[in-house]
Length: 178
Image (cartoon, rainbow, N blue to C red):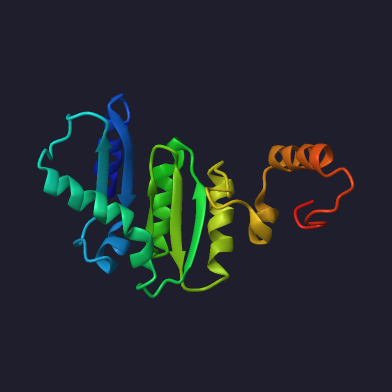
């Protein structure tokens, strides 16, 4: 399926309460992982609603999803950076990823996507795109020094309040994020 068709399928699936998650692997990464030539969409149901009912096939799909991270180490893209994209920005983000010919994967429901890079400077371009799409550079791997310049003002304020409450003497990670 083409990306637009995949996202349309995802939006329909996201309305179903029995869908636990929808995981995407773009075609660039799918080819490196030997999953075929197109984008891949994996849907996990909390009921028996899925089209695949065979236990062996379900185990195979669970295996494919659970081994994405270890198999990424075998690609020529050693840098994995995450972000969180709002639902309305998913198409534009995947267009950006395609334009830059980058592998990408993640959970569409939460919008947490991982993009792979060969060069340490390119993630900075990604963070600028995430901010433009009103996304969050935090993703699921935290902030870190690389991302701190892309934090939204309300995130900086939250961190400041947290530090004021739990580290009033500013002993931990002094000067790292604020």
